[in-house]
Image (cartoon, rainbow, N blue to C red; front, side, top):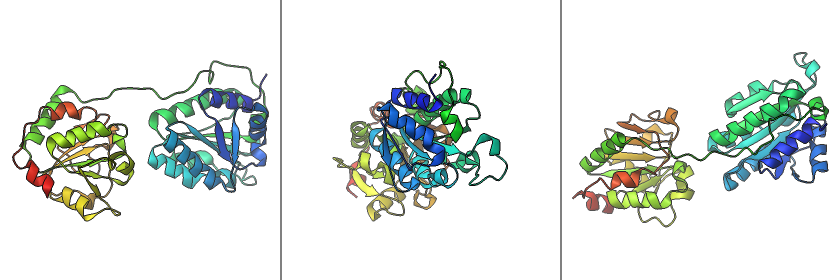
Length: 335
């Protein structure tokens, strides 16, 4: 029978993972030795675990695929926390393997004892302790699934001795864990209401964020129809600014006067794929339409008039086709 570490390596490889970022430590020995034997994963050695977590976050952001980092018990995995917060807030899929002290010593104030499930709860979408070898494949699969579906951090806490124990094969972690592909759009009534609001507006501004990734052409089509300036939030910069005649810069603490003015003077704000956090940069008294894939984010930064849960801005070319010419639009975009 294979060791639990071997099963973890197999599951990661099957799901497309090719490297693990980390720093070796005694409680990780079973895991790192399994990587050495496998010949399928590479161990990307760093000099500090914080760097491992930041490297995994960057890997996930650049590739769009699940990235993995690892830390030994106590201070080893605790050092991951800054990079994991970065990954969680940037909404990229990262799996952190946090080695732990021996199971029989948990709760005894053992050397370097911490409680990783509590430490990482705020910076993860999933965090669980593997208490027995039999639990490991199922918890690993649930963790990877949570990371790729919620675009966040999943933490699997594994006592060091469990890596070395053997367990029979199960149906868990034997198939690739890949993100599902779905089309999410508002209903026709919501699209019609949005078109009515935009038709009645004189000064429409679009505020876009990272949620418009992969929809650059659709975004330009919407802006062209509405003759609306596009302001981008920081995380939307790489997806919005290039080849964009409607872009007027960024807003926020690091923004520009042009972006600030375009939002503050708008009578209608169309928010696409952004959870822009700074309330003081939103317009006062404007009509606001927010399109966001995560329903819980709707209306939590500024009061909104129409909420649409959708993958931005996929439905909005269809909405803009229902919008007629607005006499003041050209004057507004020229400003």
